[in-house]
Image 1 (cartoon, helix red, strand yellow):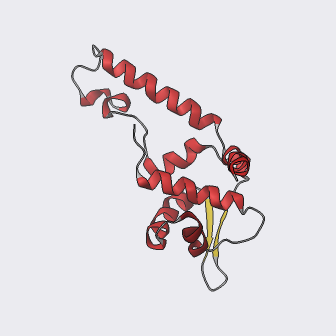
Image 2 (cartoon, rainbow, N blue to C red; image 1 turned 30 degrees about the vertical axis):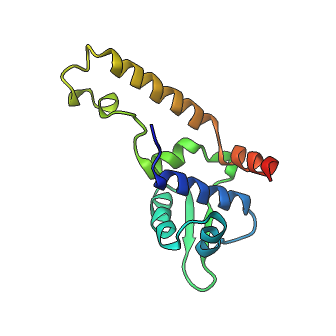
Length: 138
């Protein structure tokens, strides 16, 4: 499965927030600059993260965004789910009714196993894990 730009950039934005946790509200234009993401695109990415309860937004001259939970409490699976929806590599994994061969299809079994492996990695990794990795890379 290939993550869309939405998933990749959204995760980078949340990593930026996690790296600046404790500094108060972070302005979107600062995240956009540091992460080399268009401000307009970043503004569109924040809405589903707010809806998922991951980010809080405050408008105004002193406004900005911040993580609602500690980075150690935010699983990457939550982030990707909020931004991408299902991570199933093919539709029939989540909805066998899409294909009349689902019950007999061995390739569907492989796609299901692939999705489970991705879910395990995303469930086991938090924003704090990414913060620590980022700090070791510099």
